[in-house]
Length: 200
Length: 200
DNA sequence: GTCTATAATAAGATAGAC
DNA sequence: GTCTATCTTATTATAGAC
Image (cartoon, rainbow over all chains, first blue to last red; front, side, top):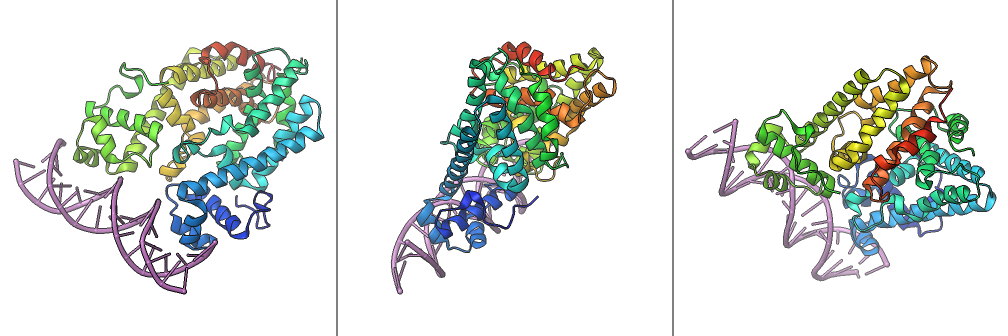
């Protein structure tokens, strides 16, 4: 699974060489890992100089931090769109999972970096991915759904795990090539059976 | 969350200094990460010499590999016990999740290393954790359950994700301190609502 | 088998010209 | 702001004595 050649939504509207640097970093970090990627590797792949990188990103962690924050900001924008487009809990949660499944196919490296990487190891200062705005809001969809009676009464966190757990697990296995089918083909089946555990 | 001081089940029946080395490595790898841990750190914490480590483990990856294989072998033994003790699918899957929840509380570093670490980054040759015998067998419980009609007809992989996805997600959030309650307190609620999605 | 002292390498970061 | 050449340091791994 390699990312598409077309310019990614995730890297739009930022200066071109910054985008080159971050895209190259994403590819190297996900394929070789943060610690096995040297700043030299990044400079070469991005076709920028070492000096450019250190001037704009401070240090190697700075690159990872910029990348992390950019991707999560874009994820947040996707959540915004879902929140506007759908009003009931079931539709919103479904839309979240559909979006994540589609991203897994179209931008596997982005998903790998966001959902699958151990950021704690190279970004010790940053919030863990689960505490991040985008993921907190995803869970919030479930919490308000329970308040409204759209989801059966239970521990709200348990409900959130049931809603998203199977999907996220599926994404991890797909990224590890254990699942061979494109995720969208499994979406309906997963969702129908997941929701059964939550329907009031 | 720190691991217990009592000698762990996971490190029994191996030579004492090997066990010291592997336990020290587990603690350092999970807290600082593989790449930020030097062999010198390990030797110091384990109270063995550098020479001892290189003689017995070949190199730094060799330590991680031994640790990985040892922990997965022990996990496999736990699955053995479950397979013998229970015969129906629902009991087996429940026992798996209960065991994982208990381990998360009693041996958080073991769980961190097994379920949460990105082994691909430092053990590129090893099978991904999801393809590992212990995890394949966990999924196999679900597959045979579907053959027997103990689980409703659906894509078997989807069923496996629904069974274990919520639990594994819960473990990840617990290890990241997003979940504050000990996992066993959430077990019944999680399982009751999860099974609802699978009951024929 | 075990240990200490040492070598070899590589990678992060910077200095200073333009 | 940008670039190249260079420095510094840390870490892996080994050599060789016991």
